[in-house]
Image 1 (tube, rainbow, N blue to C red):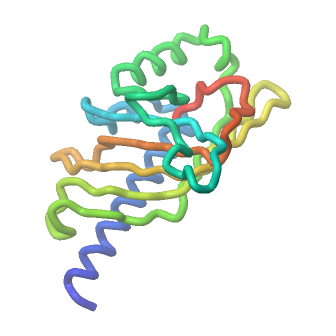
Image 2: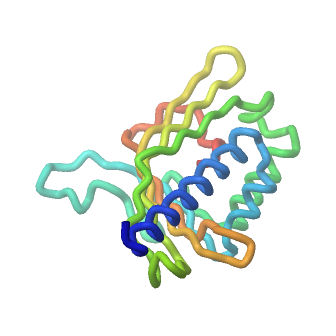
Length: 179
């Protein structure tokens, strides 16, 4: 096996481990630790899906920054959401939801500058988020996402997350879950 291929495989394993660790932090409600994984210049968006004709595929999603999205946030907004949830007075999270984040189909799309000394890595993956609330409310969010992870002296940090749901009508009563 070439050194290049070995470096790519080791990098992918490192990235997958980061994504699984992040999912565990969210599932275990360790939100402050999760926030520590986010870069200060984070872009965190979930555009809306639209039903369009097959020849208008470029209009299938709204554009963060220009159009309405399910959310289009930065680290400071996410920190405020976490702070609100942690008060114990957040109507949609009292009692707290039970959540499971599943991440699969992880693919490294690009590495800057190279797998031997990566500074930023663009990663594509699929996600499934399951939430059970109160006694009988359940929600599923399934889709794909693109993440940009940045190498720092303290490890990988999330620089950008772009989520795309496989539904265009939100069936959940709220979107308090963190992705």
